[in-house]
Image (cartoon, rainbow, N blue to C red; front, side, top):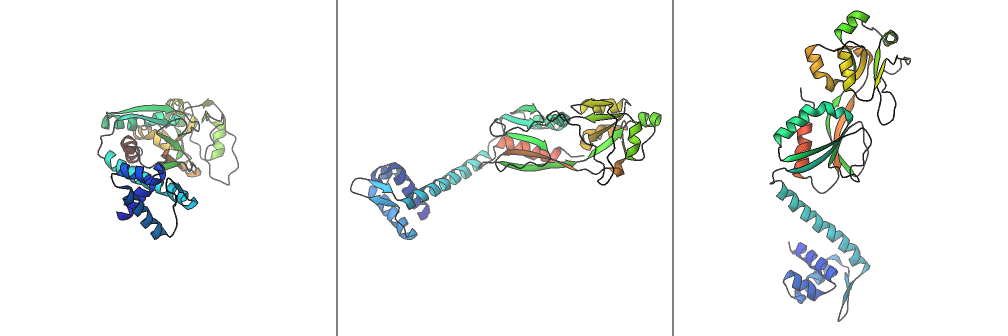
Length: 293
């Protein structure tokens, strides 16, 4: 603690450019400040100040040391604030960017709202690559790998793309046994809203590319789920979005052994000294409940 006191005396003197003013701010004498700085210089074997009868100025080494000391005190302040905030009830507005497929996460988001009624969710649904920091988001949920050194991340869970159709459709049109059979079927495709490209159906590598019919193209997957349930064709969708349909038997998988895919959903947030209580509970809740069965 004596070392910490010496650091504080040094920082105060450096910012005030005066031992007298620093002593007044810390409630001690100017000589006490001077002695603390001298002990620090002796321990470090370096001169931190140029001293004259009227002023003190930092040496180059002192300027370098001041910046490091400021960071130390910022970290101490942040640690104290973080501990204090853990005692607060999560509340306030929480601005989150969700993917378009996030509409299918609404049961989990609704459960979060019931669990934390004092948090106001501001949800922006988009597949574009948002700038979490510049656009003022508290967090963002996205699939795939994201590399940004300014962000922290936590994995929410993994999912697979699967081919599905209704039992009624398969009874009428037959069940495909190999990817090439899809040429004779109605294929319902998802188009990425951000790029305009069709999402590739993830057949195992090494297979010859199959040119699939494009019976329907949609930029969100909810219409594809509906049309597939209505027996209008075969579509490629993330398995987590189809739990109800699988449980009720309205959709079944086809060609599953011919597919190879695994995706990851992550929640990302700006790297900072601490997580606010509202963001911490959101991250923990989504990680615990989004992919629970």
